[in-house]
Length: 279
Image: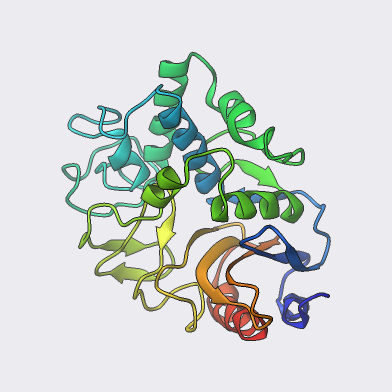
């Protein structure tokens, strides 16, 4: 049985859109649109890249608090956007740990670091560590680990199910990734302005009390995920309750082929609220 709320994507001012909802137990609750079509992910690439770093951590290849990136920075700083690197330049603009400076450059340096310590190009490491084990055959990293992933809704549903009930990682590692790093740190959430605090985990944004935000007004503070400038998002709400009494937890993926802009700022929160209400 599909969720009627997913059909709201037909009203979005985009050429093509696809969406799906998956429970914490891995059950796909509904889909809409061409879920097998490949879309550019933009920054929704980052959670996939971060998950590969978590695998490297569990394999003993890296430690979260080992040096990486600019002087004084660590793997943890890079994952949590507190390394001090600029948004799209490999230039230091602040000391590590002081501000939440959202940085594509930070994830690129993170990818370089993982490649160096493992001896495997990061795109290949991601494929071996995450994509292949999860059966994400339509997904690939075609450049920067910050923004050059391509994938399908079908594949990201597999990833969203994994994040909710980990099989590749110890659940404690995933819980750490969804825990606020450097609490109280303020910074700009791209597209939504200054947030104080601007909470982030290890590669995943944490909603908490941010306003405005790209998730819904009814999204729980524990909601985490990411959105991308290519008009894409993935959120996981561990407190979403199911009306059939079968538990809590759900994730939603939506991919489009129109760049993020005012249309998304208006459409996405209402869409999320409709999905959560129908659950």
